[in-house]
Length: 84
Image 1: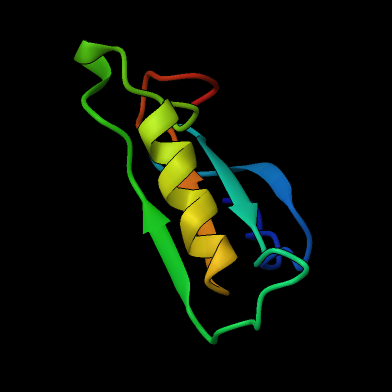
Image 2: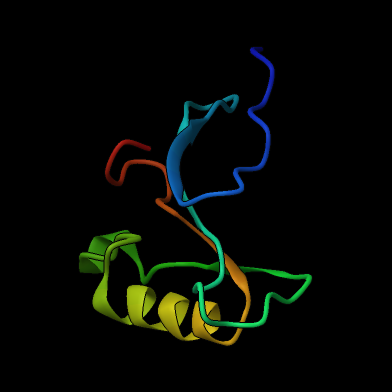
């Protein structure tokens, strides 16, 4: 298995290798005008069978609100969604 990439310090979308295939992951740091907090919030999307992806409006708005409060956010697509 290839080495895992370092945790990004800037906004980045990457593919994490896994035993059943890669997972598409989006990592976004806190907003520039927010006081950074020492946490990472993982935001999961609704069921893929209902059209859920990491680009779902509820997911992206939740992630944005967390970044505005100083959190780093991590969103990912479940297997079979997007590039996962």
